Image 1 (cartoon, rainbow, N blue to C red):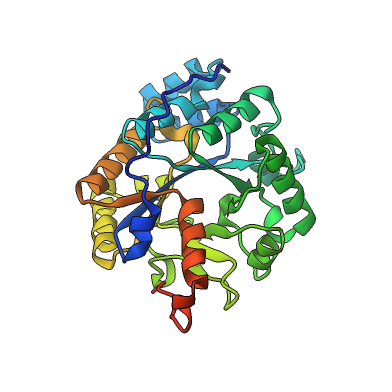
Image 2: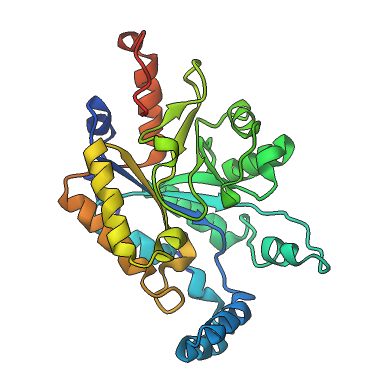
Length: 316
């Protein structure tokens, strides 16, 4: 897969100092990279559309069997964001779930993933990093409770980048009572798995990052809006507008997660255009845009500053 260079224009809307100096309506864009090539989805999506009576989309899925590159949407995302002076965070997955043909779950969790060391993938990771995008880890399905596995995945990604990785979001937003402790012990600064799998909103009323404990060295960043959860709503734009209104009123950090494979409008009608509409609406309201790694690093520094002594964490 050819890496297409784009001019690295300044990310003029990325202003962490401005976002942290006083409470502001702030937006962070992110992308879970689950799959980079289409595989069995041609069959499963064909059946889904046929069952729902969408014959045109069902026939398209049959015709797209040989078009595995439809999920390689990095260049489109780069155009959308760079043209607006924005940068986002890409969380790359290093899945190793064992395939068992007798277990239906393993077909979904073990097949169709990618090798992050494949030259095209590793090259894109380095390309994004060089252009000012943040690279984070998308912890594999079982890693949320497996320290050794998560450590290996972190080291693999860092080997490609040549520098440390501080941000993570777990696959399927999997969390346990030990997950955040494991992540901190492995050197992560923040996790952004704290969100809804089947809805959108600020989980438990948290509008900004909050520290794991009084050490203030690891932070949980609430995930507010995920593509599939929004697009399942009866009126996605109305629901998105409500959440933007709330984020603006509360001067919250609005974290978006749009999976990178859904930016092909033939494959996922309306997803890309909704993403752009949300971004433009937030820009029109004067939102400050940040990358999560830079924002949380600044947040941590603020919490450790002498003036922060006795300060209550401004998360609620």
